[in-house]
Length: 294
Ligand code: UTP
Image (cartoon, rainbow, N blue to C red):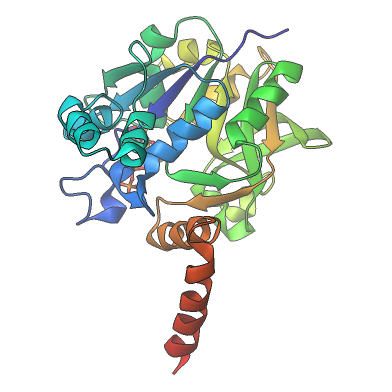
């Protein structure tokens, strides 16, 4: 039986250039969808999946992420005094317990693989999750919980996958599938950002991973790949054979908040999924659709 997954790495050191000027001083991950920063959705999903310790891989200017998950005594005292208990609960729910929040600096954006490598000392020798907050998933069962349950059965590396349009394969890590059973696809190889004509399949890795710590030894070699970056996909590919690698077709819908259109789509989808908002939102969206045609 594989060890329990207790820790998650959240690489948040990227520059967020696609969201300038919003990201000039605000980290991309702190931009809200509805009323919560994108990164808080990732943390809530992980906590609902049983994750107890969070390692944020950060860069200069991202201090507000750690502050968001820390206690805020002044605001808490003010809200308590004004008897704003619901609001007080909202900010306390966003606080991670002592010992559950770790920050590690990635001094240069050398790639996602390098960002994950930065967390090695804090993860140690146990399976761990990687969550890219940009990918938001709306699902009945938290996406990370689905992966952890699958990992309990098959061990090794288990990553969330979905089919993408063939002309999009050059944006993702793509699986070379050996066999499929139910929601699980066993991979014999992985390719980072292949040209559509050369992609071995259209099964793409999205921003949720359960990884065996063997990947750290591979990342330690600092081999560069696509875009001259240290790619996580390449390191995982080189460990196939040492540990099993499976893609898991998760239940739910993913929204790519790393793009502007995906970000707007996420706001609409999460708004329509919100019981307090959906009835007021639906007629507004319908009216806007009609008006935008005229
Ligand atoms: P992206 O490819 O979305 O890059 O990284 P980015 O810098 O965040 O955004 P753009 O492309 O400039 O708009 C995917 C994830 O990997 C992290 C990012 O923070 C994001 O969560 N990352 C990427 C790092 O932490 N370090 C890196 O060196 C690269």
